Image (cartoon, rainbow, N blue to C red):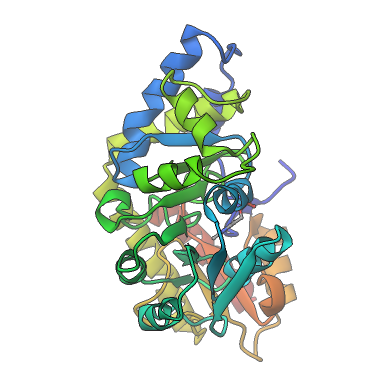
Length: 357
Ligand SMILES: *Cc1c(COP(=O)(O)O)cnc(C)c1O
């Protein structure tokens, strides 16, 4: 194998068992086999989302649904909660679509303050809010419950939540929190190859979408709902990846969701302990850190490119050297997906070897 094992936060390592499951005989998407496949995914996805709502399957990366959610929901003005590369970009995407948009911008590495969201929404005029739970570029895990509570207190204000790097690593309760759209791409914590996004839409958001003109076709929520009733998707989906998802959901069911959260907590703590040992500081504030990945500030004493190169060449592991404007000044290590304490220990031993050598 020529490519190193990925410990960068997405795409992440995909297991041979997952690839084997994907190597299923191809099936047509307008037949009974597909309906069975689609239906078989729903219980596991609903458990992951903690929802009674259907979970839709979009053959696109996460951005497709992020853009699509705006297209379905925004009427007049959107508020984007910005704290890193992905959340900041959502603001520019909203503007590029021609919407009136405003933002709350905090420094990268800081979290969104629910009180600030409340103050901003009180200015009035917003009908939609975009929010990223785990800001993968900085390792910040935002206060989802706090922000959801604030947004819910403003009637007719839709909350769109990106859980791309948090889904299945920490609880995300779609129904309980009253989230309107929640989405994730499967190449992050679900450890599948890229190309599929999963998302749920509240009843209120479906109603909003129904009254929104010019929704287009590919990301039209009403098309997804209509097809879901027949256990199907609006257009031809990435069927092989869906077989992979079926396998992963089976694995999650076997492990148990609580156990999966605990495993991520434990493997993430190993990375933090490794950082402590070397004097590397977390970029995200204590108490607001992702359990799926860790973002460290690069100290002056560390030759980051040499460290990453050494790890890759000697041990065949790839970590990430920072994203966006904090490339180089930070670096990131993923523990999401199928990683265990044993596989994280292999990475840690390898990193120690390179640092010591
Ligand atoms: C990776 C990532 C995205 C972008 O996902 P794509 O699948 O590349 O569209 C969006 N949001 C977050 C939080 C991410 O980590």
